[in-house]
Length: 282
Image (tube, rainbow, N blue to C red; front, side, top):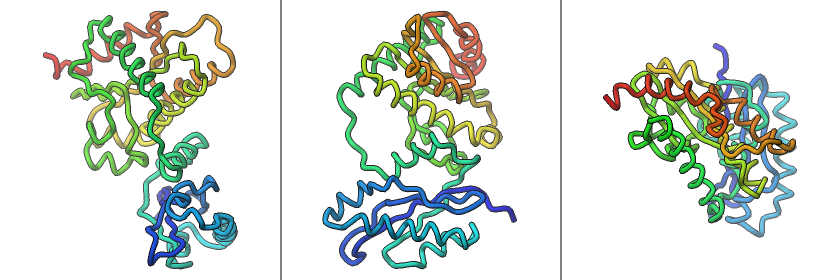
């Protein structure tokens, strides 16, 4: 039986009797087994700030070397058997080879300490939501029946959720139609901070990529098509390389790109939404 590509969260505790184990690495099982970590161990530093992380880093590097002599099927048991300080989580399915952008996002989600969004980040998201909703209204497609800032658990079955590796992603608007599931999010290029634009592009691209890796199977389970629609708002006449790359990140994993100010694909999206939502708005 062919091994299904997947990853597992690796947790570590300096003293299991005292400290709860925390996420320190991901065990990625593809053609070979390998460990992925950011080497900062931010969550461990919160639980046990006095622990010398150099020891753990050296230990994981040694284990990585030893994994080359272990089959992918044996890797989880091999890792868990090393010490009671390490725990290996349940498999999370990967539908395709782990792309570098996807790997980076998994590191952010599972291994890094989550900080509260800055107020400017909140206002940026709300502004994108407003721009997207206004664009839909101009197509005579009000968004009152659409899900807002929705995550997969809001519109998919449990069987589908089991196929999605990262479940905490959000989309600005989701049309959950009987014929088609339309995931929509956008990038506002008028923001002064390019770091915000880069982060938003990564978030959107990651969300679209997550659904793209399992798209065929998800469509069979849900019995409806899935369309990923990326919006580009307030695009300047000339894009510098940084902004061009951000746009390309969203474009790469979208099924359709819409630029309301230029009228690009606006009519096409309106037709798509109308055919998807007929059963909902009739």
